[in-house]
Length: 62
Image 1 (cartoon, helix red, strand yellow):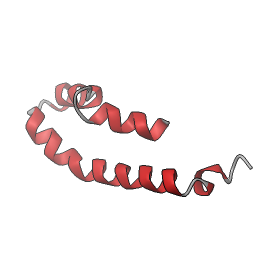
Image 2: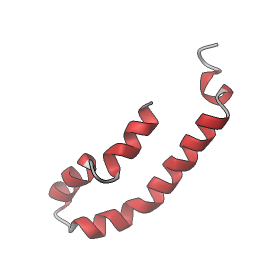
Image 3: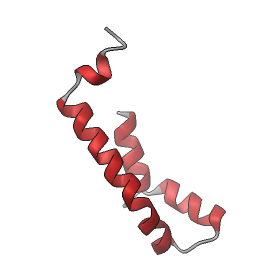
Image 4: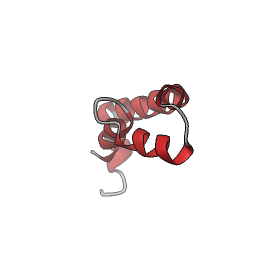
């Protein structure tokens, strides 16, 4: 669930974290989005792994 929220906060329409980072860094939103795309891809791969291989995320609880 936390990983899904991470994706939501850096992608539109919410993108709360991007707006905050834009104000702190003083850059344009478009430039910031281009810089974040690799991280979005990595997080989406993470979501696929956790969704289809749940034993990887549940081993600590068990």
